Image 1 (cartoon, rainbow, N blue to C red):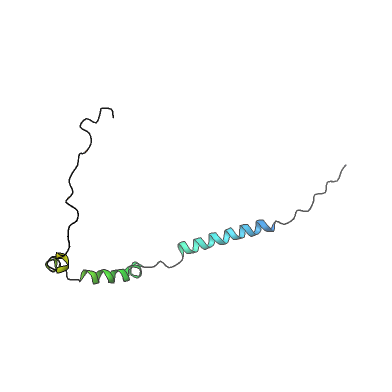
Image 2: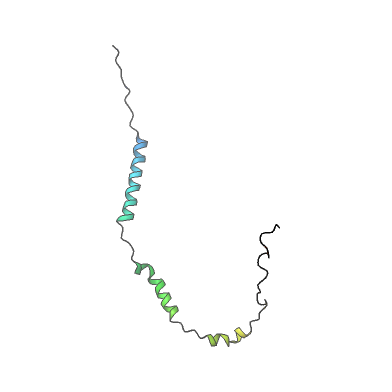
Length: 95
């Protein structure tokens, strides 16, 4: 009868480090997704909302713009656009 001796297996440190890193990454993702405080909408929009209220309170006078000398000095260098020919008279004929 033969005796069978198995070699003692070495501990895989590389696998342990990889598994530990993955578990830490998953735990961090779960924490940031579910347990961190959510910023409220008032904190996110507050600066933009102040700018929007300032802009909405601006008084605009169209007559003052149209009658200003700067607006009167503007010249049109391009004529009005016109509609050209659209498509072919018979779209089913060959080119």
